[in-house]
Image (cartoon, rainbow, N blue to C red; front, side, top):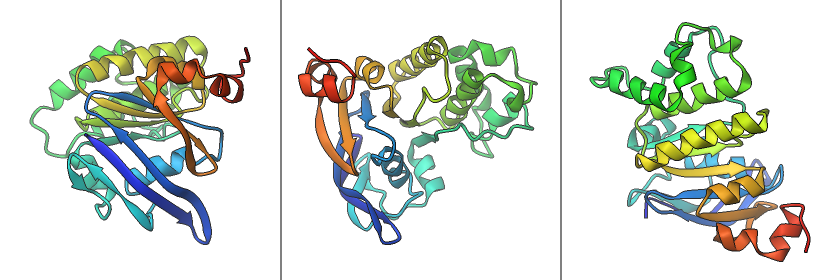
Length: 235
């Protein structure tokens, strides 16, 4: 088991937002985290990264608890986070944004950068271009590339499809799949439920801060309740 979230509960002040959430991600898996806006998906990812403190439960990564580990140390242990909205340094070049993910002293920086450019060839043509001048899809590539230069064991992806045209979303998914084949495990929070289920091996569905449904993605695609409630389909 690479990641195990165990009975996690979290609040913002006096407002409870996560209730006894448990999920698991095996090494090499792509796992989808689905649910409507406000269901708690982003908060859960932020708890895993140490950006939101939780009061009950635990997060175990690579057999060690990271409950009280600071975010930068969690990155060093092998988890990288791509937040919703990309959060790039717009006035910096593509290459400088990518370099921000790597350690300050990095003996294999060129190899890390070459990997990103092999996954996202469009970025290699825009190395000297400021990130703010890129299209939304290209900015998403930079955000993912920056995460990959940390050399992660796992990527947490928050709403990859946000603001992207369907064709660009597919290009980004293809690159994510290639990174997964290289050994990077994926936990993706995504509102495009149908495509996320097709892309992943297992999935969890969140409602009101709780896990309401879990299972193999193919089983959930064929579940009449899931089809009607989350995929907009009905038999």
